[in-house]
Image 1 (cartoon, rainbow, N blue to C red):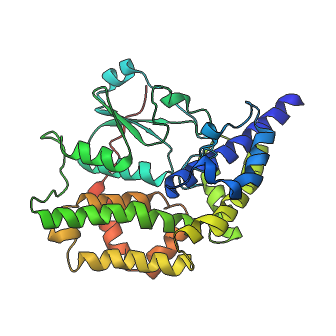
Image 2: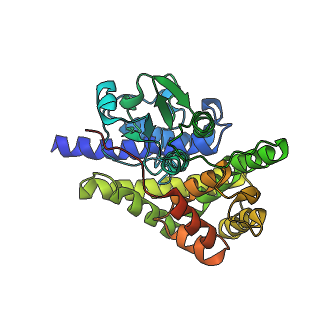
Image 3: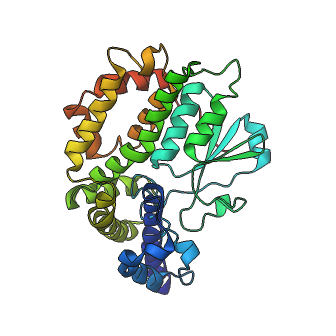
Length: 331
């Protein structure tokens, strides 16, 4: 019937719109003026978009076919509505607007969990984004603390780490400029190198692209026919984007080999120590690396990386020190 057809179109449209978040987050120089390479996909999205045509502004990244394409959005995840009254009743210190599988959001959650900061997570619909209609900034994560909005994962972590309460666990925050510069260098490396390699590996071939969307869709709320169309359309588009544009942009020619090398490079930087900079507690760099890697635990790439690099001992140590989630369920 017409209702089923509309649901199918909405599902496919959402899948296409989801795809853009990954491009926006991993391809920072992207702009609507330089999207001729995406015109075929854009034509499809415009043709099936049941909510109207896709404008340049809303297209500003097709709004993600998987937001980090299975890394970064949360196709079909049920969204929750936040209210200040609910926050006050729950004793949550922070409200995190997120896509569950997004590595940038996982970075923030790793910090919040480690620091024992009670927070509520609000899942944002990647198509409508109605949960963040209060914000001119249209990407996630967004964190609201005591009524103050903080945008961008690295900025959120930096600001919150400077205002931790006495009962909250502190990451190692060195005082000398050389150590601070080292930590900052590795935090930038996470955003500018590691995340791109994760995307390239998750969509390394057709089989892994399908596996990525299988995992993503099991965390959603899709009827079986919607899962099927989203699985194939999402995997196809992200596979094509990775191979035709993103890998070339970031000089990725052998995704597995390069991510193995990157992970071993990180471990080599630690030396014989448990954490970066000879510290007895994880630094903000440790938490950032751990957070984005935790986003891919359900993917074949993760097991491959654990088995073929020196990462596993450090990762398991981080999992223990970060501990259980400090998220508070929305009532």
